[in-house]
Image 1 (cartoon, rainbow, N blue to C red):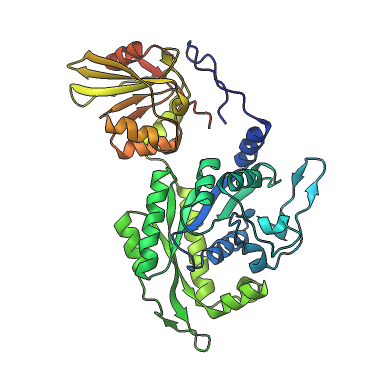
Image 2: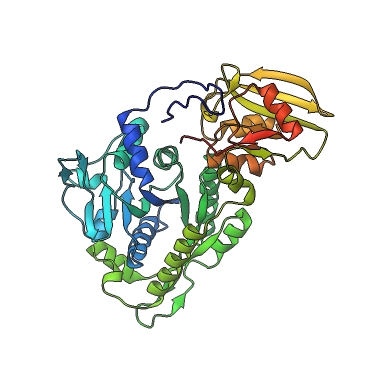
Length: 421
C-alpha cells in the first residue's frame, strides 16, 4: 500500500509500485473512520461476540455512528444476536456493498450477510480469509464512522492477524473471564498484540459475576477480579467488568438485545460504565511527548538532542545510498557506530523480509540506539521506544554520513513524519 514519495528535503527517495485501486479505496475508507476497535479473546466461550455487539450498541446510544464488522468467518454470530437477516444490498453508483442497518447509526457487515444459505459451512484457508477481510473494508460503503467495532474469532490466527495487517491503527479490546484457564489464554492475546505492534486499548472481564434473575444480586459464579489482576500483571489498562445475566443470553437467542427492553439493572449499569470508559480512552488517547514530537515539528526544525554518552549506534534506511521515506520497505540500512564524536564503523546491511515487528527486533538486537528516518509508522516508533531506541523522523533524503554529522552538530533539520501508511 505504499505510494512512491519523490523529492523530499532535496533528495531522491526509493521508487515503489503504484498502489492498486483496492489499496486506494481501502485507505480512503479507513480515513473516514475515527476509531477502530478489534474485540478479541484468547479462547472461545468468554462472550466476546456479546461484548462486541453491546459495545457497538452502547456507543451508538451515546450518539456515535458505529459500524460493526464480524470477521468470524467460520462461526458468525453477530447478525443472529441482533436479529438481522437478509443479504447486504449493493450500491450501483459506487459499486460497493451497503452494510445492513440495525439502527439509524449502527451498520453491520458479516459473512452471513453475503450468503443465501446462512447455515452453509465456510471452508477457507488463510489467504482467502485475508482477502475477504480486506474487502469488508474496501468494498463496503461504511461512510463516516465514529467507531468501527470488529468482532474476531477466538485465538490469534488468520483473522486477527489480517485485521492487524489491514487496519494499521486498530486497537485491541481483549475479553476474558475470571477463570485462570481463560486468563492464561488472554495473556497470549496480549503478547500477540505486542508482537504485531497493535496497541491495546484494554481488558474487559466478562461474566465477572452472575446476576440472579429473581433478586438481581451478584453471585461470583466464576470467581472475580482475575481480569483486573491480569491487566496489572501484563501492564495493560483495565476497562471494566460485565456481569453474567441469563437475560442477555435469552435476548441474544431471540435477536433482541436487552438494551431494547431494559432501562436499568446491574448489567446495563456495568455496560454503560464500560462504554463510557472505552469512549474516554479513545478520545483522550494522546501520544507521549517523544511520540508526539515527530508529527508536531515544523519543517526546518533543528534536531538538537545530543546522545547521552560518547558511544552509540545509529541506523538509517537507504535506497540508492540515500535516506528513504519508506522505512519498512527500504533496500538497505546504514548502521554506524560512533565513539567520542567520531565515526568508527559504517556497515551497509540488507534487512530481513518485511513483517510486522521484524525491523525493530532486528535493529534492537544489534544494539542500535538511534534511528534517523524520513517516515515511520507509529507502531514501529512505539516498539523502538519500548526498547529505549530514539527515533527521529522527517529527516531529508541525504547520505547517512551527512545526516550523522548534522545530528552531531545539532544542525539536522526535520519536518513532519512523512510515513505513507
